[in-house]
Image 1 (tube, helix red, strand yellow):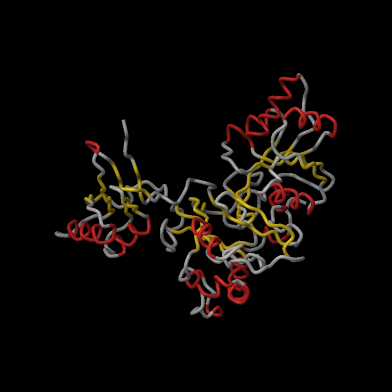
Image 2 (cartoon, rainbow, N blue to C red):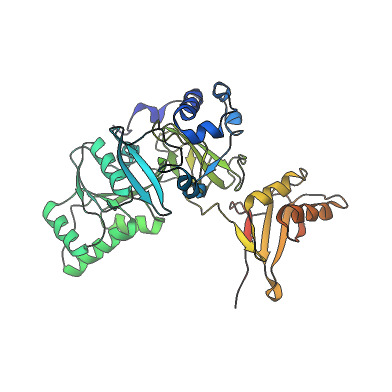
Length: 411
């Protein structure tokens, strides 16, 4: 079997109908069992949220807000629908700190689908080097491997000589961890004059994994695949043997929005990844990951029919400080909304003669007289700072998701 389940190859229109049909119940569930959503969505009739347009009218909760939300309402900021007990098997802490629940359900993080695409199968021994301490990464991998019927060696991080010795003794089929630590283990084995030749497959995450690294591992006989997952959402998208972008998980609804806003961008445009999860324990609705990506057109050559994204393309939070004042992407978006004739815009911050300067580059074919001055006034009103305006041809700004481009240099 080439696919984890039949859902991976279903008609895209049927998948879309199914996801949208699940939305009202999930929103109602979040309102009923997660206090933060009860307050945030109190005026929303969940039965009307049955289209992407209706979903886009709901507020975005961004990962950058979680620390403060959780400080105000321990442990999960009122966003979780579980409490201590049998339904919540574990709780983890990510930097921030941000606390995440792990429900007691099988394959809670839904990573088994990505492991399967990476070639993991029942009966494999998986050498898991993700941390089991505080953060959920180790458990995310272990629960996925167990769901497939694999055995796991919980190696964690560090102690490379002991890890190499264990790998020589146990001869694992597969590796789970960061690509950089796999290279460290292979280099340590080379240094010792031994071969870790039982390893044939790897699941890597947590770092960039460019084609050059994939090819270097393939030259050693290891086929390695990556995935995009977070401690809040679990699996978002995963690499397949086609190696053309990352295919979305079957249980998330993904949007790409303009950074600092909740407004979906045009297909193919880079923006912030916003995900609605159908996890009943942690029902995150329009959760802004803070990561940039873009939707790829068409279907994957591997036969999976779900939407694809390009993978991680940078961070969406481009907030910067100018003359002692914070300037946010949302403020730039607010300026542009006041002037609907303008297309895309980008605020460039530089410092000629060591003086901070803001210039809003606006895509517009034929600006009318007085528009530059009106936009400059909007900049001052919304940011409390002076800004210049520069018009450019439609489509001339780079498609890289940047709303604020800080190019200041300090000598």
